[in-house]
Image (cartoon, rainbow, N blue to C red; front, top):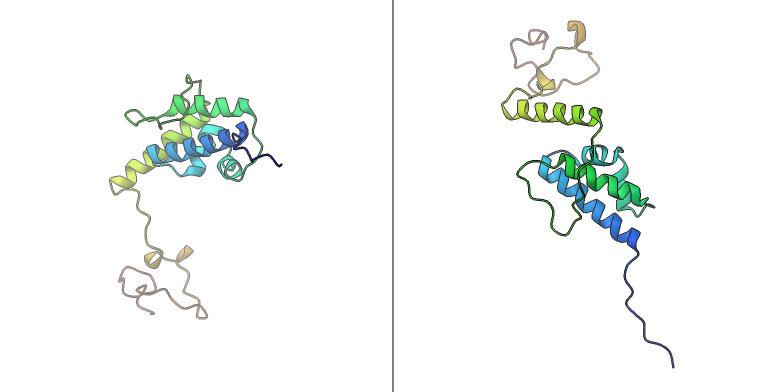
Length: 153
């Protein structure tokens, strides 16, 4: 007689990686930052998210640090993700705080219309160099009368 297979609990490290993945995604959603920046802000490593999603080995001190950093940086008014640990906040590195402020300022400027990048189609070449004959022009370059090559088009 053979024994029936038993449903075992998943290994703790697998559960921890899943929770960290959820935390990074939730932080990204709550802040509007890309998940790679969330990974850098919370774990100090842009590639952390990718590695833990792919089942990388995990140190539980890192697990605690990521959740404690998330507590410190969690946006006011945003709901903490259900089912995830909420550890006491820790002091966050000044460089991370500065990087977050830069990103928030850029997002605010873009929201106000000041963060738009000019179209490459209407920018002159460096030094007002003539357009190379062997490279096709982007569409509408010559339609802009302020473009230096508009009259040669």
